[in-house]
Each structure stands twice: as C-alpha cells, then as structure tokens.
Image (cartoon, rainbow, N blue to C red; front, side, top):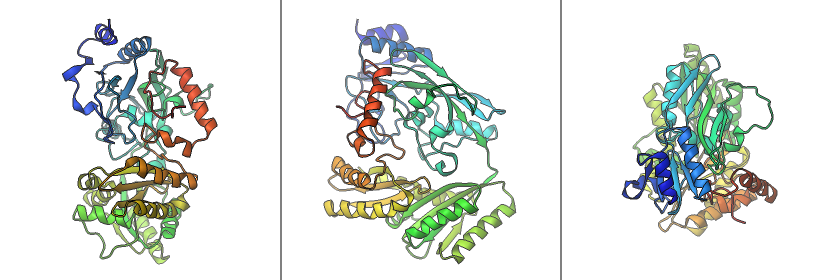
Length: 455
C-alpha cells in the first residue's frame, strides 16, 4: 500500500483529496510563488484526524505542508509536487468564550474575522487584526506570529495567545490549552509553535486573550512635513492618548499612488508624510474633545501641518483604504512586498537608502513605503517591468543587515526569506533552531525547506 492508500483507509476519501479533486487554490500562498499542486490535500475535521494523518506520514517519511488561509507572503505554505498538504479549513469555529477570564477557545481553521465578530458579540475585542482578516485563519496567525495594525497597543499574536493544542510530527497531541495569565510551570511549550511556521507541528486549537470592547474609536489623518515630526507625533501620542491603538505612517509616494487610484483627495497639497492615528475611547463627547485638543496642540507645536478627524465610520474607512493599498496589487501586477523591522529613529534613513539603491538598479521601478512605525515595522513596495525578486530582496536585506534590523517584522521567513536568515540571526541562533527542529521532527517531514536554511 502507498501512503495515500493508508491515509484513505484511515481517514476516508472525503478527507483525502487527490488528482483532479485538488483545486488550483492549493498551489500557492498570496506571494504567488507556488508552482506545484501537492501530491494530496488532507482536510481533517478534528484533532484526532490530524494526529492520525501525521502518524501515517511520519512512518512513511512523507513530507507534509500545513495550510491555513493561504494569505502569507513568504512562501511558507507552498507545497512541492511530492508533498502532502494538510488544510485546517474544516476545523473552524469558536468553542468557548470565557467572559470571566476574558478568553476565547478557537479551532485553528477559524477565519480571524469570524473570531473577531464572536468576541464582539460577547462584548470583547480580539486584538489580533490585519488586512487579510476575512480569509486568514487563526492557526496561520499563530504559526507566523502575525503582527498587524493593533500591535502598538496589544502586541503581536504571540502576546495574545495563552495556550495552544498542537500535533507533533509523530502524531502526538500536545494539549496546553491554558486559560491563565500566570502559569509559571516550566518550559512554555506554546512558544515553540508560535512563529515556527508549521516546521515543528500543527496548531489545532488555541486559547486567545480578549480585551474589553471599546465603545468607540477616533481616527485622524495627519499631514506632516518631516520624519522627525512623525517621531515627535508618535511620542506625543504615546504620552497623551491613553487608548492609542494604531499609528500608521505613509511616505508621500505610497500615499499619493493609493489615494489617486481610489480617486480620493484629502488635502490641497502633497506632504512628505501622512499618519493615521486611532484611539479607543469610551464614546463620550469629552473623549472627542480631548482627541481634537491633542491634535490642536500638535498643530500649535509645529508637529502636524494639517489634519482631518473622521466624522463617521465611512470617513475612517476612506483613510484606511489608502493605507491598506489593495489597489496597488491590481494596478502593479507582480508587486513585491517586503516587510522589515528597524529602530524607529532609523526607518526614514533606511527608506532613503533603499529607494536610492533600488532605483540605481531598476531606474523605472516604483518604490514606496509605509509602516506601523510605533512597533518599528516598515513595509517596502517594489514593482519593476522585469521583476527580479531575489535581486530586490538582496538589495533590501543587505541594507537591513547594515542597519542591524530584522528581515521579517511580521510576514515570517517561509522560503522567500530563508536564504537571508543569517542577515538577522547569528550562526549560533540558527544552530539552536536546527537542534529544536531535529528534536521535535527527527524525520524532517514538517514543512521541509521552510524557515531554516540548508547547511
């Protein structure tokens, strides 16, 4: 019997998809770099089925690629033709909301937005939030330690996970569904799986931390003359806005491209920088008055040149539609999105050096920048008529190494950043990663070729 025969016998043909039953969507994550359909796609409906599948694959030394919502941009969920993909899409749903503890227990295949709405109905905020919320899945968020737009207030995914259930390569189910904030009982095993991109096991459930649901959210779009003033505004907001939940900066070229693509006009001139500030509030008139007073003081101090305060959810969404930049992918096919992290004070210096280097090599390229700034995260958008992704990566990541930053702030490593991992991690650190991988996956079946570079 083949490994496929074993899997069908154990799980059934409704779980094991082969041949023409495998749809084209399993070819690649959102990076568009996947080239092959997997040998088979497994769609388990329970942790027990995930365990049985991995035990069979491990015995047969069969490589396995976990798949979530396929919204990643690093090639981490791309399979080779000889790999078996395990999709968590059928393991979806919120199992419990503990209103006393402020936690949610959720299956790994649950779309982030579904979990957010369940939390909201219960009067809570699920702080993890990113642009792909409608299609990304909780398991994928955990496996990549997703960041997003609320990090400045609530932290990355890692900071919002209290417990996980994961299945190891040999089928062992490791259940650590802790609901307590304090639990100091030896090694924190959940952290092994958060950010490991499916190379150590498959997350099947998680306990997520919830926050009180804010009554309202105030949003402003600020026009700023210099990056020094962007940093000054950030410092002032961190001091003066107790509910600061987002601080998103856009360099002029990025803002102009997306505003024009959406046919939106906010100011009567182009400024070097634009910043979206959001604050979670109780919803009183006094909150709005204090928010506008903060912006007025920033204007008086010469930090902000102009500002608009959203008067409705529609106006706030207009601000965010520019920041999310979805039109860029349509108008610039093959756009390369880079995601790096550097000290906040150096983001603009890096942006200037990066743009200069990109244009020296690709004179007709589109190069633009936006960033979360408050959490030191900068995104670089590069488009050329004759794309050379590895060359573009090398230009950016060589600069990141010079600045002693990180080649991945929130997108993960996958395959696309794997060969540049030593730009941000030492030989000793990579060596320890290999030892952990060998200990938990001695046969090397879990997402092979991802994250850790070959020797």
